[in-house]
Length: 112
Image 1 (cartoon, rainbow, N blue to C red):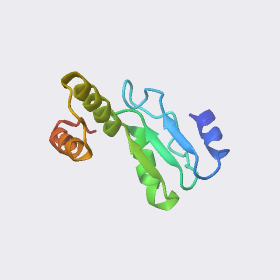
Image 2 (tube, rainbow, N blue to C red; image 1 turned 90 degrees about the vertical axis):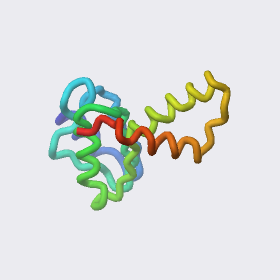
Image 3 (cartoon, one colour; image 1 turned 120 degrees about the vertical axis):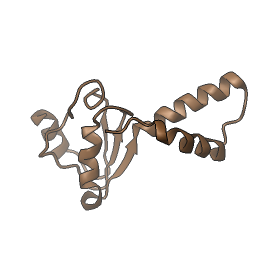
């Protein structure tokens, strides 16, 4: 995680920082140490949609100070499944319909 922290310090503002490591989902943890600082105005993308999600929690703690935009893997997990269901059952996946799906799935979200 110290190596990842060092890479993070070299990124310019408005970078895209992604957790695609599996840490926080398959195993507890984050690819970053607890001392990591995100560059200002970054887009933070947590691929994971379940598990301990430490990376996302690190970003949430810095969201206001660093003006981060956090993209939650749960949203993309739902979008992927919804797209496939729409293809299989031949219906148009509209934004209002996806909003209903998002709301209906909320109680099923595995949050830690």
